[in-house]
Image (cartoon, rainbow, N blue to C red; front, side, top):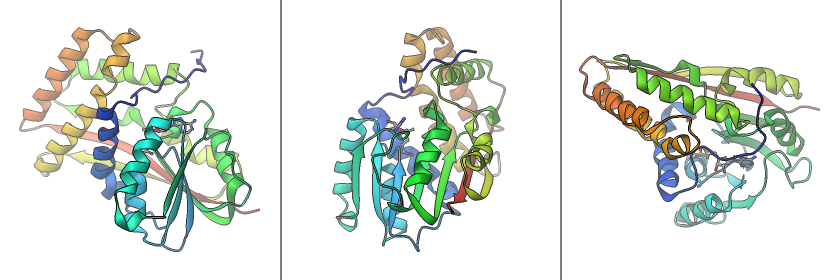
Length: 275
Ligand SMILES: C[S@@+](CC[C@H](N)C(=O)[O-])C[C@H]1O[C@@H](n2cnc3c(N)ncnc32)[C@H](O)[C@@H]1O
């Protein structure tokens, strides 16, 4: 398939989407941050900081940390500034700039760590982004990346319209130069651009009758994630309204099914910079 090089961001930048990013960060905090430790670090770069949802978590968890966030979209950065600006303990510890991840306007050796969450899936040139991040990190610095692996999604009861919708969601991202399957490739990418001590971990949300509350919350979160792309997918004819309506009905059915199963795996990779 030929990849297009433009970048129409699948989720858009509406206030609903900005709130969804905050809810998503809160929802995933436990699994994303289990093995992240920036406690010995002062100055990190957050690439694709969006509305500051992860920045808030990082600043709360690591009270000595100072974050420089970059994002391609000024609306996201304005939301990030106002959100982090409202947190007393974060005063003077967060700054952000409009910048593209593949062309960082920082000197070499500017940061002691880097954090990327749900951004590489949206860029056309992830190796170039990782190479740029490596350039601006000091020797010994750690990079931590959290990314999607969308082929891992499973729902019980079987929901064919959700599945069709999900494939269209992935096709859209792939056709527009993103990569919904980038999680599995992080190890190769990091190694190819010269990082060391490359580690990858598969993180799985698997909820069944044993965790009914988490299952309900996850299905709710997932429904919001899927539907955040509906307008764009209809507008660009990847799905029609009928599929969206049926997918919604199926998700509702799964949410109410006493034997429902939800499963999704994402990936986290870490590596270090040496010269
Ligand atoms: C799904 S959001 C994730 C935001 C944040 N990391 C989080 O987890 O809440 C992806 C963000 O990446 C930004 N983005 C996409 N491509 C980018 C690029 N080439 N350079 C910088 N930011 C980019 C988008 O504007 C968006 O804010």
